[in-house]
Image 1 (cartoon, rainbow, N blue to C red):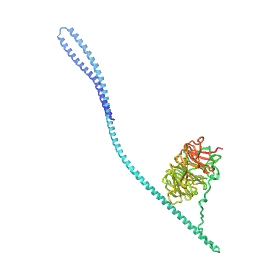
Image 2: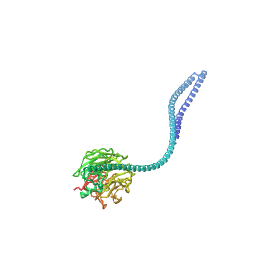
Image 3: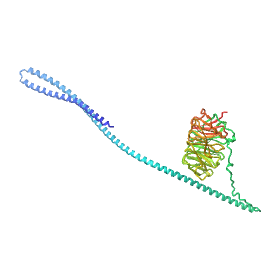
Image 4: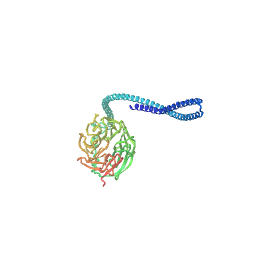
Length: 545
């Protein structure tokens, strides 16, 4: 920018020099013309003198001869003068044109000078604005730092208040339940008294009441509900070696979850395309027979309650949907979360539902009343929830904050009963049938087997090519609890021996998965394995016999 004024000066000097050169030629012509005019005048004077002198001369022939020579010379000079005048006119025209050009150039130079001045002024203003904005940015950064500290303090206070709110809510729910129990007890006592009065009036002898029973309800111990694992009834687990069925099941994105029915005759899949699908499994082939729609965003996790004919789906649209399996209609819609629901499961003998997700809150729903009965605040995103079937009214949750928590819904405390911490986020949980052991999928490319009674790690499983594919990658356990399996980001499926931690099998990608495997489920009879990937594909693995 600083070199432009000197270049304009050079242009002006050059234009002036060109004008001087062109005008110097005109000046030469003008000077020559003046000389000719002077010479012409001199010749005219000489001619006049000779004519006067000839009048006094005695020889007229000589005079005539001199007059003729002078006339010829004058004519020649007139001709030259005329030529010079024409050239002078031409040069004047050229000079006028050049003068106009110089004026235009001068005007353009003045305009460019003005623009240059404006640019310099604008640059100065921009520099001043930059300094001012830089100063403001520094001030705002200082304010941001202070506000960040204030935000952290407010967030801590909010979490404390939220915990108090949850505790208060749980106390109120417990009070309401206590009031309902007292009301039911009073009603039962009233009915017993009325029945006793009726019996006393109808019978002759006195009625002896031991007082052992005050209501018509009978308590059934938790262990009476326990059933042996289905795998124990089936009697065997098999190692698969080939893909016997491959089918593209969704319109787009990944197959986020996959589960079998208890008898193994049906397969359920959820996808990021918001649709839950039901397939008939027969003779190593799957055929779609039902489609369940309602979710506005993708589904993350599934759970099934075949006793009541229900299937559950946790959705990214902040809702948990429960469908009737038979007619594809939505039976319940649980809304209460403020962000995506990553997982939801039936628990406590399928009487309740536990759900959690990115809003860092676990909600307990009463299935019969269709309402929230309790909240837990773990303070971190929940990636998976598991019903602890061997522990009544208990469930587990896996978190982004690298922890697995054990919760007891009967406890008045809003804190978890126990927890274990890993090296990375916990993406999936699966119970080992008939035991107090749970398999955890960890984002550090390992699987971990824990005992939920003391939250201690029993075994760890890993392999060289094994890579966790996403935050919702699933793991599974065979029905007899002999093997564990999970999918990898490279499309492979890995199977380990649960006790020896030996890598028993790697199922190949040939004629199988073309994308990362994110969902997996073992057939209830132990002889098949279903897997889903990020390329909308479901594969059924068998022995190939």
